[in-house]
Image (cartoon, rainbow, N blue to C red; front, side, top):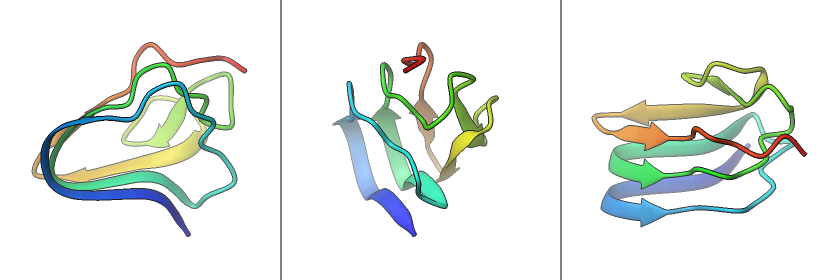
Amino acid sequence: MIGIQASVAWSTKINYNTIENKVIGIQGFLCIINARHNYWGSPMGPGGRGIGIGDKLIWIFGRIFYFPWNAS
């Protein structure tokens, strides 16, 4: 299950949300996404291409900026 999916979006903001209990928290294709200040289901931050163990970030041809994140 994917929480948020975006494609061909060069200035998307997804901030101050709780993104948890999904297989993939955010998936982006051809996107630049500002996803800072979200809670990812773990105080250690997002997993996948993120550095933590929370819901995963996946991007193809773009970038998701996720630091800093909310710890709760």
